[in-house]
Amino acid sequence: MKHFFSRYKSFLLFFSGLSAIILYLFFNALTPRKILPIYQPAEVTYELVDSSLQHIKKFHKIADFQLTNQNGESISQRDYVNKIYIADFFFTTCPSICPIMTNNMADIQQDILEEENIKLVSFSVTPAIDSVAQLKKYALEKGVIDAKWNLLTGDKKEIYTLARKSYFVVKEDGDGGPHDMIHTENFVLVDPEKRIRGYYDGTSKTAMDSLKQDLVILKEEYGF
Image (cartoon, rainbow, N blue to C red; front, top):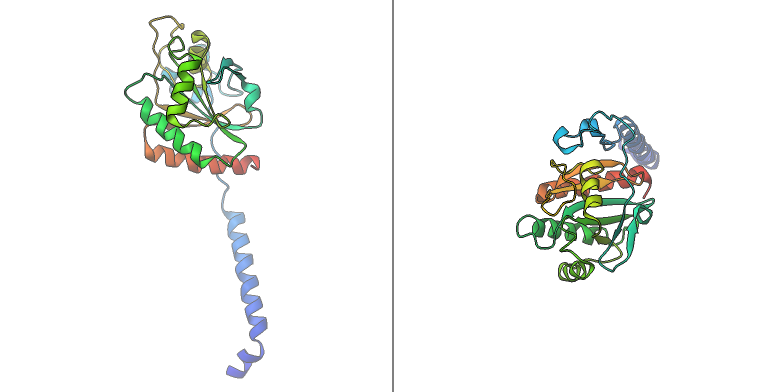
């Protein structure tokens, strides 16, 4: 028996290795590939969706926008063509959850520095206060890297409409008036086709871990 194994050692090692590869490929073929959901208005908590959209079950996409970033540059959906991005809504003078959210977004920024197809965007909900100069000051304080992360200001009604009718992150309708104040802790994951693929509590480390895992899945889906 010892002589037999010695004589056929190379063949047995090759056969064992080939068997292991076949089993691995077979297992992968049987393991379903995880795909992130595509969120439609009808599938989001109805309080977060404008009444005109609550019945829609397919084809929802983030609306186009035209706002100004911390460098005074005009930013629109064209800047996110073929990109995955993470969005949130904040204001620079917020003393409660915004600092936590900003720190978590900064942490994600570090993770995606070498990912040219992933970006970040934060919409100010107090654009009258958050001028370009104020956003730039905040960006410098928080370590915002311009090439990765836009802080946006502009028309308040446009921003509030985006929050209510595109990203579905606020319960109040609002009309962009001086006494409106929307505030949400949600981070929103958007794919290159302008579709919502995930919601995450921007104040939770656990949720941030989930977001990072989902980024990997979405990258694989688009071959990034």
